[in-house]
Image (cartoon, rainbow, N blue to C red; front, top):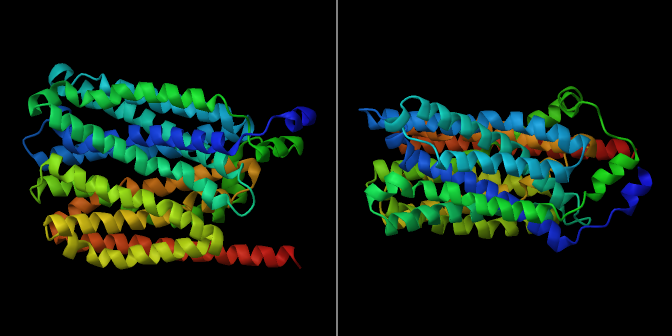
Length: 433
């Protein structure tokens, strides 16, 4: 075993970074086309109701299912990722996500098969969540466990770039379809095209990932016989505090992103009076800032430390919460564009270094499971309720209440990152005597 592990060829940096980027781009593209359809399509085709708000809320409920499934995916894929390796597990996660997405694009509507339609939609949404729960952690470890010393955040930000790229491709596909098709054609068959076409992207992702070799860190863990029998139990029993802090630390990342995307799209098209063809370009411009700030944040994190960089980003989100209503509530194009650009730019500052921050919390033997669980549990607490809670708060108390909600979550994350830094300092002091 040891000789075989040592003889394994090293991955080239270009291949590693491209494999981590292409996979998460595909995964997030699949995930976001569902998020967009949950606002624009599913309330009309899968949840017929005399009350449009009720239909939207039911659609958002299926959107949240994936976040409940992601911890299950994190445990399932994390178990095999920590037991048999990162490479095979990443391939399986991509297949799970891709097949579920294609199946959604082929589903009959409520008018065709009745209540079975939303039930099947929920089932395949569950499959999306399982796949993404296993994808993120593996892609991050593929990058960070191949990173040279001092460049962990820089390498770790490449899978993070899959989020803005996937979103731009998702929003762009719906924008293009909206421009080329009539509303009747779009709701008849056009919305299905991105879901079914994702099969081609999955094939590309599988080809790239099958070309990589196992990470050096995992090969060394095999050599030292460090694998544990049940990684999930080890994480929960021996790294409980670390898991809790990692989860709370990532909450603000999820809250701000899904407020800037899913809730903003819903509120902008239903209350502010924007057509989807008018609002999606504004979101795409905002996501450009998201993509630009990710590498900037990673460079900062490698220079000043991940915890410091993420505390600063969380406090900036806290302050931005108080601008939520003045900017977004104005309804004007300039105010809305400024709102989306600042918010998504701040999202990049917190999202870019997050992969390195979470992966370095756990030892190699349970790193896939631990990092994936922290990320996905944060999704449950942060992202899954965000569109629903924001819709309720905005309807009942106004947009300023949504901003206060964002600020509160950001403050929680800042405190968690501070505590993570304190624990690290204490541990290093003990190790150095």
